[in-house]
Image (tube, rainbow, N blue to C red; front, side, top):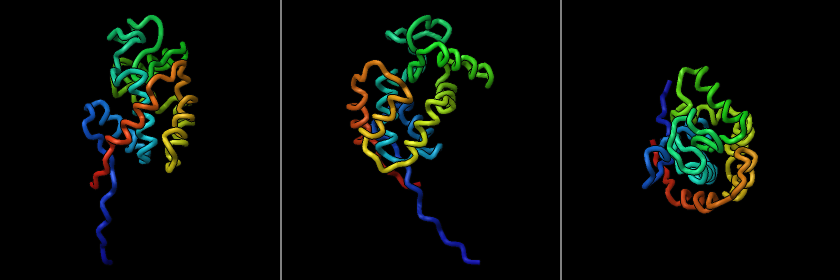
Length: 163
């Protein structure tokens, strides 16, 4: 049997990004989200929600999960009672802290809102605007803010690397 070398797999790196931003890029790609605009849209939304600060309470206080007493908390600012408590229950079930970056990433992709959105993200080949329209159903934001501007900024920072 003849073995053929496989071509290198394309993989995005985020040039000039923080370790937290790059961690999210890698995490999403490992889940099969490989479209540049899809990745950029998720990054833009997280930046708008938390600036990638996993221990931030709405309004800007940097506190542990149990000290955020009103508003959203964490990477995507889990705000509703069900989603906020869901983060705590998820962390407890898996032996982690709801203030932990990795636990928050894992919880994010296990929420029903994300699971529906992930199917859209994995479809690929769409514009940032398309993914952004669907992001509302994931996050349910009240203020759009700069999330689309941030997403377009990430499209310029994501560069293909072959591994």
